[in-house]
Image (cartoon, rainbow, N blue to C red; front, side, top):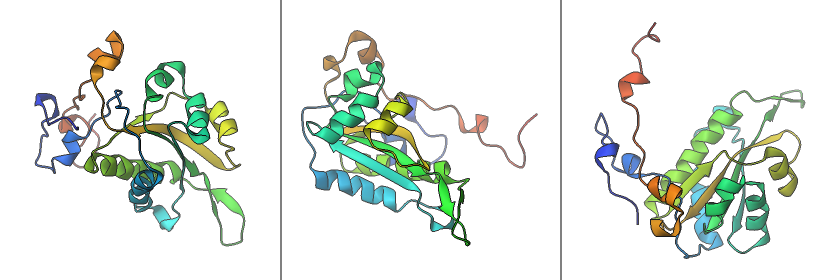
Length: 199
C-alpha cells in the first residue's frame, strides 16, 4: 500500500507519478520478503549510471530473522532500530572509495558516493514500483557497521535502508505516528537556477 499523491506532494512540473508518490514510511507490516525479492531491488540498483562504468556501489542485505539482518540492525542508532526492526529486510549501502589506475595502483574515486546515491535511488524507485516502501537512514554507527559487516579497507558505508510492505501507523509511538505522512519538497526555484547561483 503506497500513499497517493497528496496536496503536500504536487510537483511544480509534470513528472511521472512514481516520483511524488514515493516516500519513506516507518511503519512496516509483518509480511516477509524473499531473497529473490530483495535481489530484484538490487538488480535495479546495479543499472544506475556510473562514472567510467566503475560501479562502486556495494550492498549487504539481511532478511528479518536472519544473522545478516541482526548484524545490520545492531549498527543503527536506538531511535532507528526501534522501528526498523519490523522491516522485512535491511540493506547496508556502501561503496568502494578507490579505483584501480592504469598502473595498477589504487587511487581515490571522487565520484563513488555520487554514483552510489544514484544506485540507491534506483533501489528506492524499484521498491515503490513493486509495492514496497524503502526508508534510507544515516542514523547508524559507522564503526559498528564496519565491524559487524566486515567492511573491507577502501570502502565506506553511506546508509542503511529498511524495506518492506507499508504497515499500520497505529503500531508506532505517538511521536512517530504524527510524522507518518509523506513529506513536502521545497519549490524547484529555490534549488535550481539558470546560468549561475543567485547572489
